[in-house]
Length: 306
Image (cartoon, rainbow, N blue to C red; front, side):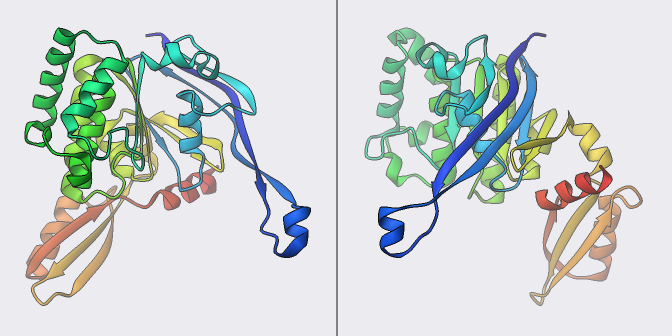
């Protein structure tokens, strides 16, 4: 497989105004330089599903915006499908799809199907190709009942399904997903993860998914890149990460009195199922939550071992 994304010492710095009060701050402002992405290098092969993970402010979204031609880098370079993104914005747009969890590409007041139609026209799809493509995506993402509703009336989970369909209409070879599950409940997150993975596998779509949620990484991707403060700190398979760092599970159960009982399980010595069985025997449980360690804890562990 060939490298479809190449990143070489990519750097992005922002010049920010300091918070200065009074006339001095108004007429003689002071500035500081913040490094969001710091000499970042990695390659991604065609068809790979890569999780791009890190805490808030790590530089994930900034990197995605440079790779999708929204931002210019301060230094370094990158190639996406052999094109330098910020020099070939129009050509690259026909080959990539983007979803930003906190920014919609659907028209707020229009019915969803009208937004899809406009997107099809923007990408120059002929009517037959557009209808065939949309029909498949509508069926896969189960959004037929939503097509006549304006975007403003959709729940967040419904809107995210429609956003992903919109990004896939022109059959992109690369899909950038920036926090696609942010703000969603557990059920909606699981639906989005399953649909994205299924779509990527069916069409061999290269996937770069940014998230602060380790479950997104574990359930959708086969490789993980972790950055912190703009720098690469881990790049390996999901299996390698799980073997080395994801050996804890946080379990919280609620009993019939409403009390919450929390425990941490070392999965190297105790299977999660065994731990749950012991809790079920001990308490009258009404609800169970099982979570991975927070990303900040994983990063601290990586630094500690290094």
